[in-house]
Length: 199
Image 1 (cartoon, rainbow, N blue to C red):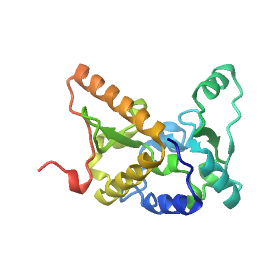
Image 2: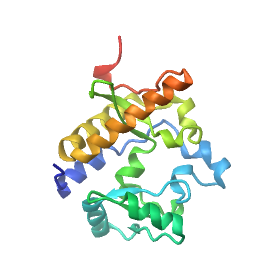
Image 3: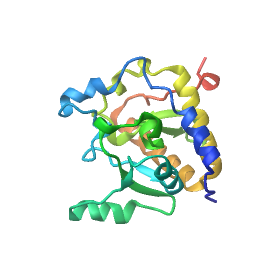
Image 4: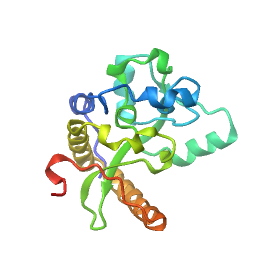
């Protein structure tokens, strides 16, 4: 079942995700490598996906967001194949016109997503696999604030109760991470919430 978020719920989610990941502006780490703008703020690197009701909600608050209009065959194919009943591709006006209070869930959670262990239990957060080697925070895990990890965990816990498709998606993505880590012989870079940290 995929329930629709209310505006009250979206407000609560945004508050949970309001705190910056690190004590410093992490966008300054990658900006020099990507033409002066953070990796996550460039459409060619990451097109945000917004919940449909989130897009409607933000459209009432700001003119910063619009539906993504790809201009080449490959991107049009991606949009057609990957948009769902739950999520749509959107674009903002760019980092120079960013309104922090009106950032999307995708902006606020990047580059982290939920991690489920082999038993299907939600145990923490992990980097989006497609940005491994691109986002410099992967080599600076200790810089990510524990308070942020705890709030993001709570956010995703609430989301999984509302969107069953999201649950299935991240269980599958977590399986892919384990396969990849096993092949490379490396430890999974899992960020645990305070109450689940290994002792």
